[in-house]
Length: 384
Image 1 (cartoon, helix red, strand yellow):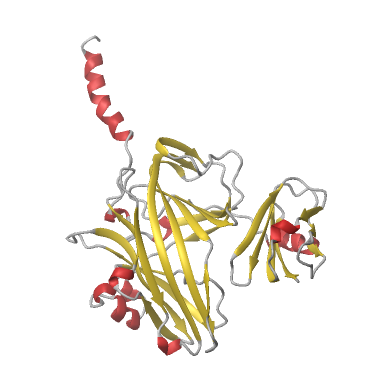
Image 2 (tube, rainbow, N blue to C red):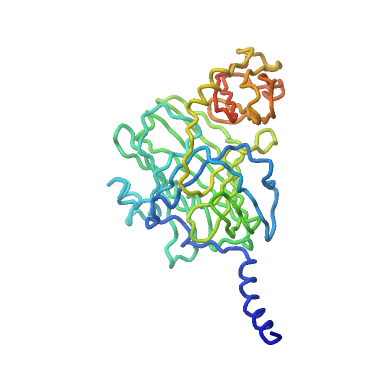
């Protein structure tokens, strides 16, 4: 036994050392067309995080993040197809002869619109490229978008290769330094009479932690990357003069692991008035049967009222909500999607009060959304 124990320790030490290091993410861990369709199923959870989860400020080496209590409110499947499987137009612009716009995969995804455009857009795609193995610098980037406008495929590319949105640079691990990219795209002049969109973005990636992530999907060794997005968007409709605006600071906390192709967990926040608020939670998962909330939403919608409406700047607002609904959140956004505030409330007696300070000096039309365990409902509100 005295001879066997040292031998066992010699065998165990390399395995333990390997487990206690940050994963190193490279190009092979990015989305590819060989990925099976259902393998990238994602669950969407409530942005009201459970009280038991660790704070987002937790960083450093060898962490443990326990998000096993997340509950899916809905699910979706992230799919990636070849560029040739999209359309002849996209195959020409983003295919093998696309030069700087060459994409390696396409994904049916919504366009990065700051507002809902009142034009008939369908069949939208985002196009991504992973650097070829022989490339001097390895990265994964967005090279453009596409959507059908009245049946015609419209490609949108970035201004240049140097102004594409670099999502990750490789190799990526806890030891990697922070990096950034500056990107710019605008819709083509051919559709300017219908609508116009441009986006100037600065993306900053900082790996700030590694360790064990626990979700309903399983337990994984991960590296966490915090992405900061600073966007300035411009939109116009029907040939009218455009409107430019700064989008509130967005952060994406992403836990990455080897061979999984998409983040195992993504928590998105926005900073409004100096306060960082969670706006989205999404994680890898298996298929789960989810009870649809249409009936519950209808019940919440029937109860929700806001008084007075219209209301004056400098006055509070009273909301009628489902009594005893437990934890609920109230958020307000303006007509271009910018969040004014987001507040959480505990158990209630059926009414809650929003103070004048929540709205600040805002004047105009806003959308007030209440999320409860009994459902979600939205009201249009006017501040005069």
